[in-house]
Image 1: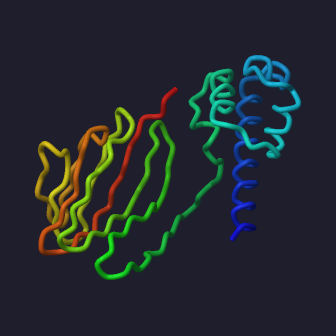
Image 2 (image 1 turned 135 degrees about the horizontal axis):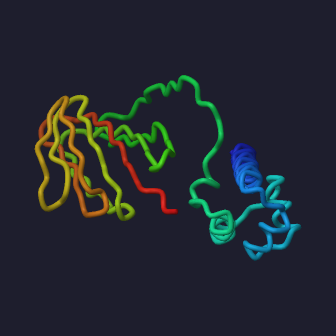
Image 3 (image 1 turned 180 degrees about the horizontal axis):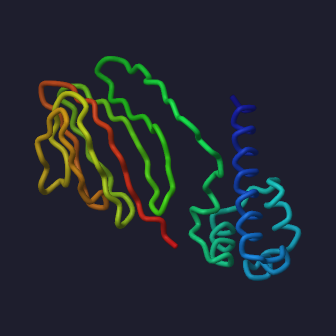
Length: 189
């Protein structure tokens, strides 16, 4: 387990380092210039670009500001996903299943989740970042969901979009529900 975690961390560091270098080169900036603008040493920037560092969010934010890009641009991975297949997973009867199926960045940060709720489940949604919108598409079952002060009764095939930056809820009655949730958050730039 620790080895897998280390590979994931070094893989993430390499991806972030590649993004820093790519964005710097797109701006026609030397390493010295970017380091100066971000308030870093040239050695630190070199280590980060080589994927050997473990930058804090403050360091990444300083680099993003110096590059005049959203912070999320440094966290995005440049890969061609080609066709993407995510197999379904089993959950134990009576448990709530929350699965992140995909993250996409393109003007917004999009997360696609599958939410499986047994009968008689009551969940409170924690407000997300300002400007976030949740989209619910009911695949099967029924639920009451949406803003805490104005929830809607939804059935199979129903779609509901609502402000996710305010208190919201998801509640099933006598039957379970299988729902696709798309969370769209603005990328702060």
